[in-house]
Length: 354
View 1: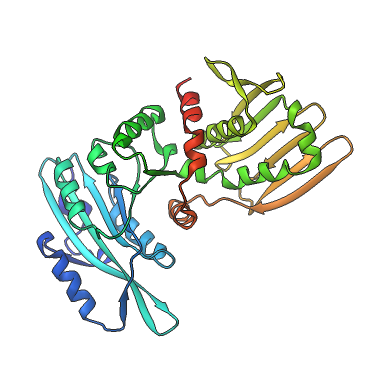
View 2: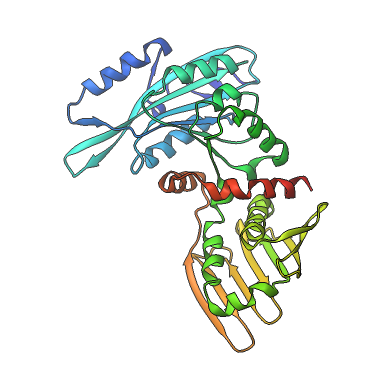
């Protein structure tokens, strides 16, 4: 059984200065008064939540890098729900980066470590330290739990998740849907979806080629190779293809056979490959044309290809990021309403359930 000092040492300089929770605001003011060369910068509240042991220190390192490009008030939370003794510790620090070589632009970080049953304490602790003038981006790491309540979701502007990390994605998406009923404007950003960006861009660009466009009505087969840990990325790409191409489910009980607008039957095959990156290949076949986007293990690029018996065109693009820190940075940079993900979500969830 863990204790407060087992997970977080008595002195933890990686998290900054340990302070009483009641003194956080006062101690933050002191932090800024110490150096007039520092400028406090924030464009959002970024809450990073985890129930994984050691997450606070690891996430503090991520925030240090993230704040180089994304100014925020960061609130890091690690919870040990299995520790029977209720406890709460807090730290403050600032991540500072030079601006124009003259002054430091700094972002505040508050870190909380909670133990025991915490739903009410967690919510009140986080709400009390948000900058109320800024949007709330909530990065939830790992499996969902009863901490994700309707009241918590109601104040979020963005919820960042990684559905690939869930043991039961269908149940977890149902939980998010229930919690989000009070907040229809919430934007959901899924690492599983972001990992497929270059594949989706590659497929869309290949079908700008007249040869591929001509073959579009005759597509009869889709084959997607993926790493076993990233089946959700493969399913989301398949859902995206079906939605964008207007394919209908041929059998409601089988989400891997479609009918095109011209009546052609399209079969989809998903292949696990433990040696593959999250997505290894997406191959789309018509009678005499093959369109494919591939990424070899360890490659620095994604290859795009259109090929017929008499024609072949190849182009390259960068690979998608894979680490959580890189994925969040990309998601924050792109912003927007993520409307395409919302569009494919019902089809993707139907695939999960079938």
